[in-house]
Image (cartoon, rainbow, N blue to C red; front, top):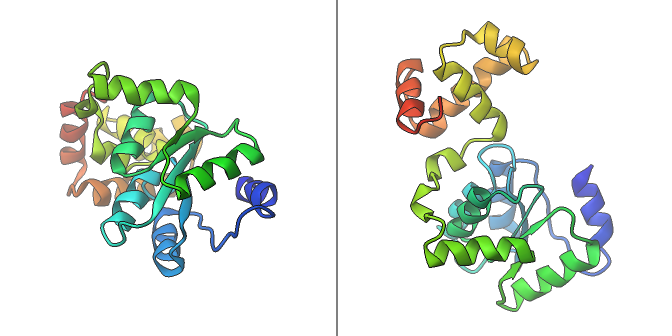
Amino acid sequence: MFRTGVRTEIGAAVDIVGEAGDVDEAVKVILETKPDVVLLDVHLPGGGGAEVARRVLATDSEVRFLALSVSDAPEDVIGVIRAGARGYVTKTITGDEIVDGVRRIADGDAVFSPRLAGFVLDAFAGAVDPGSIDEELDRLTQREREVLRLIARGYAYKEVAKELFISVKTVETHVSSVLRKLQLSNRYELTRWATDRRLV
């Protein structure tokens, strides 16, 4: 629904060459269509917008990204900028402002909502430690992080399902995805990984 809304808002002003609903699809569409600018959802399912930027820029350094999110958390802003995005705006932005941002990114400018620009400046000034942003954690979706924390605390799959109001099968899917993304083999390694990062 959100993508449909964005398409309606900006479709008359820019050429939309493709869209995607998850990370793998996004990388495929971007590399096939080679857009000038990608409007990137920071919390895109399958690993997040930062993962899309990293994978695409490893193959095609000409693509420019404008991140779009409901989140104005410093770790989200710094994480996706560090992955290669040229700007970051929140979803309170108007259609005209998105179009203006896309055009400015295409021209080589950087585009930030005023409050978010402060985070980036603070990071470069040392007020926010970019090293505190965990690239591995950035690959996980919000739901995967929730499942990870509960599993690491010793919850059984059934307890996680009850806590998050999802099915046991969905929990299993999320755990498998987390293990794959973090390149871990089992629940013990996952718990140690989370403990080391003080996520438990």
